[in-house]
Image (tube, rainbow, N blue to C red; front, top):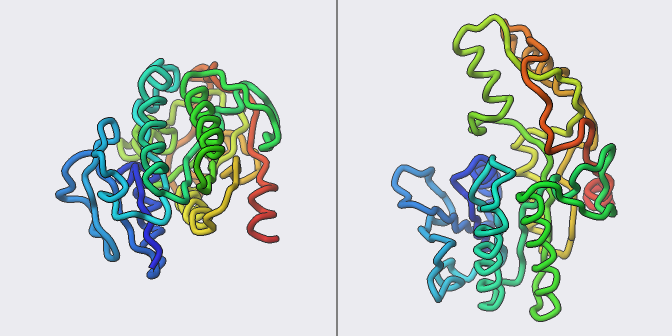
Length: 281
């Protein structure tokens, strides 16, 4: 059995990663919950454990059952990407938590990064580009990646930095466009208010994101960074129209109701070449 610990297990992505881990009978799961775990999904091969990463126990690695791999998704303060909390508070908490585990024996680590590490660069974004984060969240994630890379000069451990782009699926926060569309349909609205919809983005179903994260974790390798993306740009307008058609919703997009976000370029998407080469050889 391979023992995999998962932080952020109760979140949107984490819940789908947990479901994907269940598909592998050779994996024993230790899922971390910040709050008491009554009412959480049953883990067939493993258990829930309550840990506050802001003040972890001194024997943290032991409490987690000495896992072979940690998939680290926990991060507070989203979706407010502009909050100074990300580098004032969250960054030192995250680094201290991961450093403690590595010092105590963790040998393989997968951490979720973000496409916001690229900043306001447009077009197809490959991992070879320099990072230029333009908001506190992207800055903090990019800084954490660099801290962990430097930590590898002192400790031997595998690090995979999975740079996430956009995703959609069940359980997504209410602020997401996918959830907003479903809400409008549930309310019986004839029109769905949205932006001009011409911004180009890169979207994957969250189930596919979860599958890729688990696959990368099981490799127990150094892959820093790697884009988790479709590699195919799509306009938000076409994406919404696609969702409406696939689900046979009776609603029409109403364009131009909201301005475009000013914390991201109008057109950007991920280059998936590195991931494709890794999977397909």
